[in-house]
Amino acid sequence: MRKKVARKEIKGISQQERLNKKLIQSIRKTSKEKDADFFIKKILAGDKIYLSRAITLIESSSQKHFELGQKIIKACLPYAEKSIRIGITGVPGVGKSTFIESLGKYYTRQGHKVAVLAVDPSSSLSKGSILGDKTRMEALSRDENAYIRPSPTGNTLGGVGRKTRETILLCEAAGFDRIIIETVGVGQSETIAHSMVDFFLLLKLAGAGDELQGIKKGIIEMADLIVINKAEGDNLHQAELAQKAFESALHFYPSKRNRWQPKVMLASAINHDGTDRIAKEIDNYIQLSKQQDFFEQKRKNQNQFWLFETINQRLKDNFYNKPDIKEKLPKLLAALSNKEITAFDAAEILLKAKDK
Ligand code: GDP
Image 1: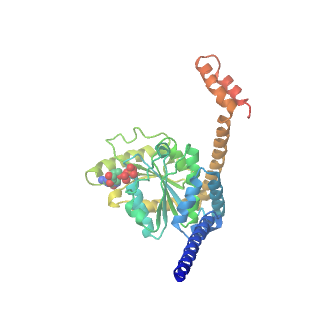
Image 2: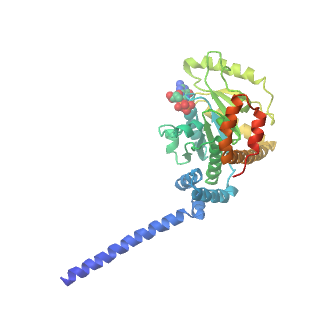
Image 3: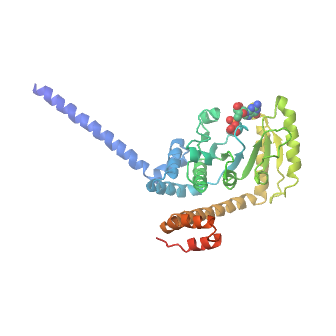
């Protein structure tokens, strides 16, 4: 009887010990996860799980997570910026994900590591994402040298922009040397994507001779390359006509500062046709940009753009969040529509609003 109790006690103690051990392990694990150095080590070793967790930190609205995320980014900075950043835009259905998968697989076959990120303001509203659907880029997502991350959600484009830029830095520190930024071109998303990449590619489809109709203003100026996708079979002739139409349209645009002449190329992403030629064209551009120091300069300009963008956004947020503004703005808007005040006077009153 005594023996039985003793055994039970021994069993009890060892059970308790086991529990304690587990608890300590989990505490150790969480404290490790709170430690920026631990994250940094893992990211620099190319660990995709910790890369994802760090990105989640910078996307988080919690102040604690945000601060830890910023610490990690700061430590990663010396290892970042060593990639080629490629922006890809086009309307839904044009073949972006098919094309990115083909280009991404081409790069990984060449020994590169590819990260695919997205700028998708519509996902911020719907809380969905253009890259959220797992069935997209299936082969690329299975590739151990590829990393696919859905678009961050955020209330403002500036917020989405900041998160995406910080994600780029983390991916670069994790050794990804080809960063592809996908955007559907809703709202200002193209401008946002364009202001964080080295090379900007516009994907198009052949229309019925109305290629230039409905094309968003400014998008042609942004493009370093236009690709007409689905150029195969019966569609090939139309695609060639579209190519000619875009080529002649490009003549009306001033040449780029680095004297790059954007081309119009054909592709059939589904058949992986054209991907290698396009990748070489991107390489040519990067080579030319580096020869002229344009590459570095462009990134410096982009960093400055984001500095001012962040300040402008913060000032605006602070301004509109003032209680005095919240109270006066609707009244002044009503007075403005009743023609009791001019826009200029209303703005003057608001600009003199109390800080608290
Ligand atoms: P996204 O919405 O721009 O990302 O477009 P997807 O990559 O999802 O492609 C939309 C549809 O077009 C899918 O059914 C693809 O299989 C198809 N598609 C993509 N590229 C090509 C292509 O080169 N040729 C043909 N025929 N279909 C394609």
